Length: 352
Image (cartoon, rainbow, N blue to C red; front, side, top):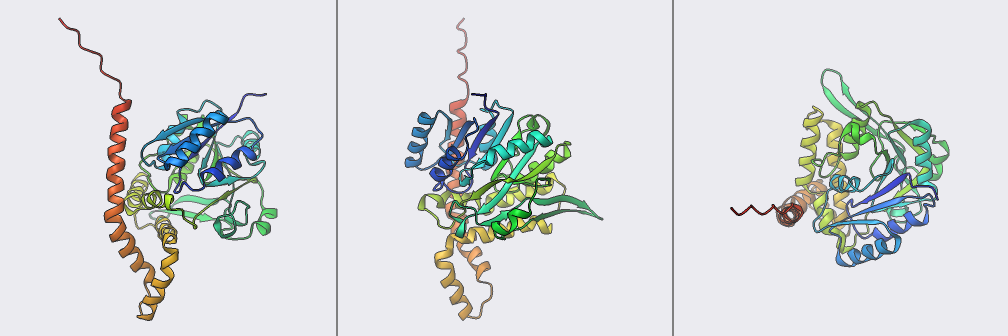
């Protein structure tokens, strides 16, 4: 059997409940030889046991931390264990379809691309494995200078039926693909450096694709590769703490400031704010069971800003200043303990 050309690095995104579905899809749909590194950022005990059993049975590398990881922290951690020419990053809530990896690798080999992304889909209601609706078919991305600097980001074919769009798509160079699933030449990191761990919550794929293009590399879209993001809802109880931390104001606005400073943009940039608006709507899914009644009641009172009030009171006050702060403190203490445990023991001083 030929030596693997690709290391698949699986990282946590925002939930844990899709872990088994995602991992099993990788092994079921990938006949091509590959190595796999699984980064487990503080998954619940029963999933920790499942992953340990799978690592032993399938022979992949399992790296666990006892604290929640940002996606770029996890990716950089996985890169330390990769030796193959290519890396396939995949989130732990993504299911792949047959031929996904072969198509990405073929595109990279034939075009010389530094990064390649597939067609990203949702299942029915965002949950089923079978691709149904387009999440994104890549995006146009650039920083425009027209008297000032502003971000231009426009995603293609969003929310259209896969059956309608797929026959029209073709392989092509593109500005932006996403870390839900992305094949990257390992040599690219020698040019652009490690992924920016100060981007805690979002804009990680935007920052990386900009860096690739600034370094002279190319990014390609390959629609022969299709993956499905198993987005919530539904939510499992185990998902809620990490989901709240990932999409917290603390992580979001820290990421936005970092990206704005790094790329010399205003925090008021319209497309930068678009990511904030996405977060607001995405985070509000957690309240899907009660948000409807809340909105109806507020509407009865003549208030038209139910979403803003829900965000401000439920998330901004009740959750951000209690649950998120507690998780951040616990994460900080766990990272400190891990750092101390990993530090080399000082050599004993010579006794005169």
